[in-house]
Length: 258
Image 1: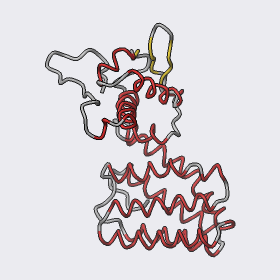
Image 2 (image 1 turned 135 degrees about the vertical axis):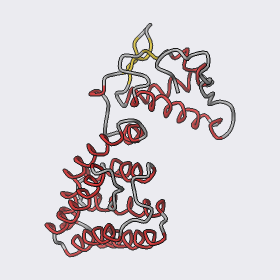
Image 3 (image 1 turned 180 degrees about the horizontal axis):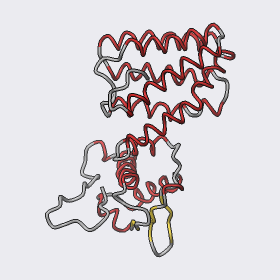
């Protein structure tokens, strides 16, 4: 990653992303540079107001300037940087960032403010997922009800096996389907935000080795309430799922619910 200040003589050289491997593909190079720069910005390694020079970044990462420029364009679309003529690329203040962008969420979960970000996302989820569950109880199709029930069954199987990646996949399907079943396109569009929260908790070891059966039971409660058309019950069960996860984070213990 690009250091915030000049490297010391003993510092290791920055990674050259063009040195072969999967990153040798232009799309892979762009994604690698984008991730490196994004991580640096959200972590504060490249602080607000820092100037990033394209003619230095291409040398830093060992890629073409077109790859760097494409990465910078994506960062601009996220509000993380702005390009100034004859000056370079300036890191913008945090209030300017598109904090709903799943990549920004992922980078922040990888950084030093992970706990703050998870608590903030928990408060956000509490504001829309119970509402979505309640709406889903009114609007879900039979196919969506079946998909939610099937996801709960898969969660149960993978929880018993201790397969956290498979559990994560089923949990993600459950929440995405529930949000889509709300029939509200704005709520449905937030499924990537929830997916990043679930993935971040799993990949940063904030889940127990074997998800608690209570977690599966609460997801089943939501699915059953949606299928039976019981909006208040769906709202309450979804609220319990989110509240436990936030409480676990504040107490410094693994969350048992998704």
